[in-house]
Image (tube, rainbow, N blue to C red; front, side, top):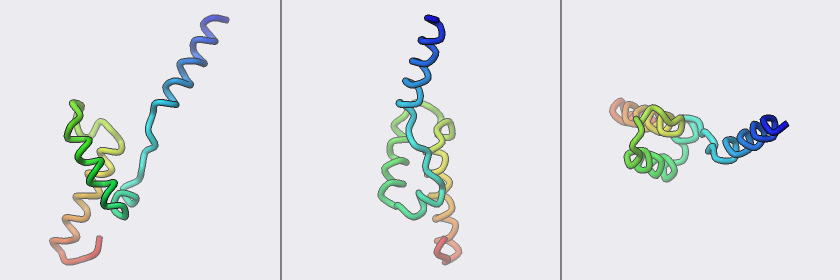
Length: 74
């Protein structure tokens, strides 16, 4: 019974601590949030691609840069 209670508690703690993962399209459409996330990702000690939001913000930024080079809007 103690193990079950401990597992349930741990599950709630982990789910409460995880941040919402935003899509690449979200970061393309929300410039301020994208730039803020990229800045936060640079400050973190973990590799850039280890965090889903860092990865998606980075992919959105790369897509926008490619589009700007080609003269498109994304």
